[in-house]
Image 1 (spheres, rainbow, N blue to C red):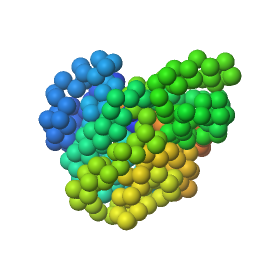
Image 2: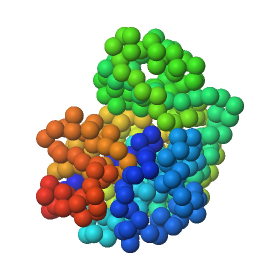
Image 3: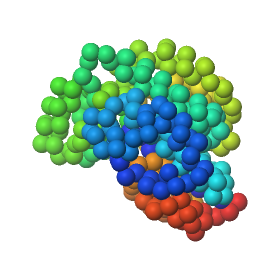
Amino acid sequence: MSYALVFSGQANQHADMLPWLEAAPASAPVLRHMETLVGGDWRAALADPLRRADNGFAQVVITGTAMAAWAALREAGVSAPRAVAGYSVGELAAFAAAGVFTPDSALALAQARARCMDAAVTGLHTGLLAVTGMAAARALAMFPGLECAIDIGPEQAVLAGMDADLREALVRLPREGAQCTRLDVALASHSSWMRPALAPFEAALNSVTWRPAVCPLALNATGGLGQQVPVLRPALLAQIARTVQWESCMQAVAERQPDCVLEMGAGAALARQWNARYPEVPARSLDEFKDVQGAVAWLQRNAAFD
């Protein structure tokens, strides 16, 4: 089956995401473990804006629900993908789906990642701003205190920085023709603000068992593909304090020539990005299906069997 997986990041999680998840028996072990970390009321908590934006909660929920969904797809007979990519924190679930470490390890790393990143900006008010319709270089020239956190395309990026700069950019950039959205993430992720998080997160990465990936992974830190641990581990570490090369990741996945792409997680932002760039290769989000069988049927219709 020739398809690719892309795992969603933070900001699109919502209370009604993947509504069939608890009814899928294969999802239960991952969900139980996730609930020991964030509580069994995680859906209700997602309806609370403050709780939803809490990194320690959100990063674990995003990772746990993605891994639970992947377990359900595997139980339904879906084979390994041709390539996998994860957007920001979605890279943890992507690595686990590719067999690099276990779902339990992915959840432990999600919790450690959030803790390390929060500690890196203790006492500071930082965040992220999505900008479309303007080149990142132009926006950064107007606001040199900001940094490019995620490179999505020629006129699409996520900027990181201090709250005051982000609030000013949210007002001024639209006057220059940009569309701006403040993201539900209380961190200047993938920027120099995260450098203090590198050493403690490296210790967390070294505490889990690593294996080579069963399929190529498109890596946030480099935009290139990797499968071997000596390539994967430093890339997963570096991405928390370096610009995510998402445009290059999509290109790397496209070069593997999948017949279709399935987004794992909440919302459909990555699927929309893919369809805009590669309309000849259909993409859907798992969050658009009423049950796992619908997603499997779509994959079977669109992905040729190897």
